[in-house]
Length: 344
Image (cartoon, rainbow, N blue to C red):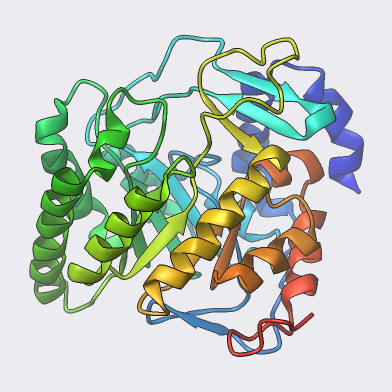
């Protein structure tokens, strides 16, 4: 109800200004928010973790972990914060976020703007949150692509003790050359480094923290097959499908439709679901898929699970619909079980 009243005011502002204002409000007044607890009939066991429901927050909305407690109060089954880089960076020049309300879509080219991994860790330390927290990690924009693994390892070291799981984001279209890391040799080297360090950190901390890889929706069949094989070979714990798309055809004729950046929201739904379905076929249940991309209704969330995902993430749909979308998605997926894909 409150979001229904606030949305016209927020949408009258520049998108990034509205984003920061919302985070400011949650950070400063989140403690007064009523707690909403949404549980499925049975908790979901994924990556060795127990999720109270299958609906989570995608990375990108709370890059620095500033509003963890407030976001948790909305009823998410888990939160993913970040993407964070080793050093603070401002991201790409503004303006860098554009709304398309008629299409329920957003183009962004933020560019991993964040306070750096130390800032995020400080915020996580302060948060009174005992739920499942994913932390998304990436590389600084000025780190050469051949040294990218060093940035991921640096972040992995810093966040390992505070994360329930860690997401390696190699698929943002807004950091130059980042998607090259999805290539055969680059991905093989990166995952080998991450897996080796994960094993070392598990010994040091006495706790195993799963690692998931976040991939793009703009992959062809050959690329997807190669990524699936590499994920299996390195025993990666999960895969997040997908990031934003470079296909702007749904908004190309509209003002700002030709802006560079990744497109999210309703136009991404079918493309993302197709990747999930193909990936599920290639992985054959060997590791779980976390769905992200175009979830605007409860039915969309259920569609992702039926396509082969185990968990679902919201971002653009949450911006357009507010907290009620979380409840809609939890209710739509409440009875879902992986061995009964036609559940409703």
